[in-house]
Image 1 (cartoon, rainbow, N blue to C red):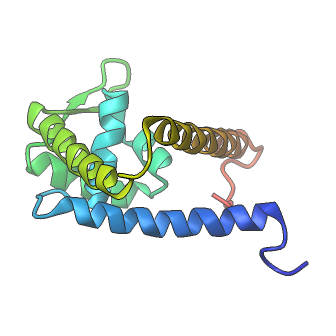
Image 2: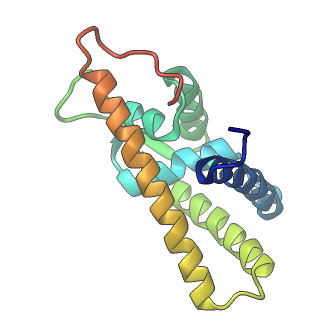
Length: 166
């Protein structure tokens, strides 16, 4: 069956186009800020889950430990997050936002919301709420699927497997 002739292929194409469009929206709202897109993603996860472990952040964002480590070092050096020893695991550290990190993240979200509001100026509150609900539903279903793949891979008899779909 040719590409694009099933609802699943149409969804893939639509989500890919949405991802690119959102990147453009993010660029419009960024201006001259000190934290890049990747750093903001790390800060956002930490804000929702603090204190948290680096492995949890990397899994959620979908990057490797080395890439995350570079982000954490940069963000810590900028005074946006802090690492503390885990009280339950001497080998682990917990990561939390500093007040400055929370301010930086809030400022970035305010800028993005302003840009998005301008682009959606012809939508009413009900349309915006319906779009948010649909996007949230898609994200939750996809995340649940990804989490189940991670659980399966972590409990496989030979340990974690390489999964090209993750």
